[in-house]
Length: 166
Image (cartoon, rainbow, N blue to C red; front, side, top):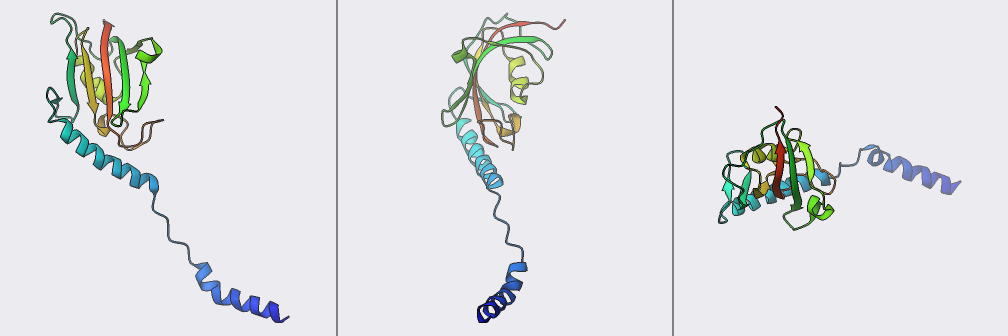
């Protein structure tokens, strides 16, 4: 009986503390995304100063590594493009590569990440560019498979061919 009274006393004494909701733990995902955005912004600012890197008003950066013929066509939205590409993070982690698969991607120029929609129409068939994609023109503040939220993506893109939508 004495043990039961002690237990009841402890429960009553602890009651107010137990009734309070625990403090919410910090959202690790939000913190990581915020950290990634700050790192991405700093990385892009430094990259913009590298020789040959061209920065567009949208924040997209690119570097021409191989130029196709000046008279070669450029695709526009709706055209079918044939590209080889490799996507990686700034730490060098490759997250996708048609080069590794040995098969180029064939797709309509539409529905791709905004960076590709902006860059590829500026390319000519035969061009190979390196795209430095800010989070806002990629997957933004959400994770996308192996790509963490607010990450810079680096794409090596070779425009092999195109078919016009006309």
